[in-house]
Length: 222
Image (cartoon, rainbow, N blue to C red; front, top):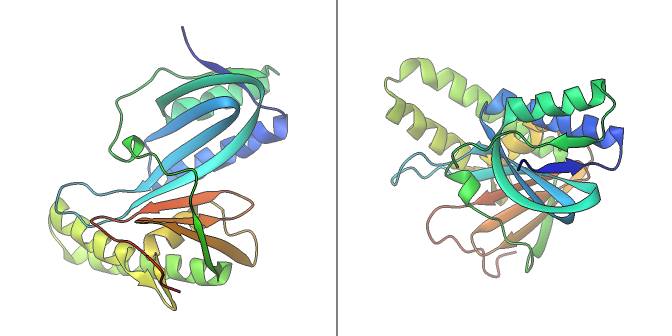
C-alpha cells in the first residue's frame, strides 16, 4: 500500500515544489521523506563523498512541513516524481498526495542528522554565505576543464566545498553552496549550531545539515 500525506495548505504545497525544484538544479536525484505524527521532513542530498578516500562533507538540505493528518513513514523517492505528484495534486485540487514508488537508498540518505543536543554558535551573514557559494562555483568552473577523470574532478570538488569560508572556521563552502542553491539565505543572519562532527545552518526558509568526515569534533571552540 502506497504512503500518502496531506499538507496543511496549498501554499505549503507550492513551497515544497519550489524547494524540490531548486534541489534538482544541483542534484537530479532523490529525496528522503520522513513523516512522524504531524510533521513531514523533506531531505535532499546536495554534496556527499563518493568513496572511502573522498573527504567531501555530507551536505543535506531540509524543509519541515506540518501535516493535516498524522502519518508515519520513511522512504526514498525520485525528486522529479515527487514534484510531479505535488503539481498534479494542485491541478486536480486534491489535498492528499500519494508518495511515489521508492528507489534504492543513496549514501547520504542513510545518514540521519541528530535531533537534540545542538550547541548554538556565532551566526553567519547571508552575504557571507552567498559570496562563498559564488566563489566556490567559480573555482570549480575554472578548474574542471583542466582536469581529466571523475576521480580528479571529485577531488577538486572535495577541496573546494570542503574548505571553510572566510572568517568562519566551522562552515565549509559546501554548506554555503547548499544554503544559497536551496533558497535559504532569505534573512540577514543565519543561525549556526554544532554537535560532535555535525554542523547546522538554520533559517526561516529551511536547514542545511553538514556531517564532516573522520573524527571532526568542534568541542569548546568559540
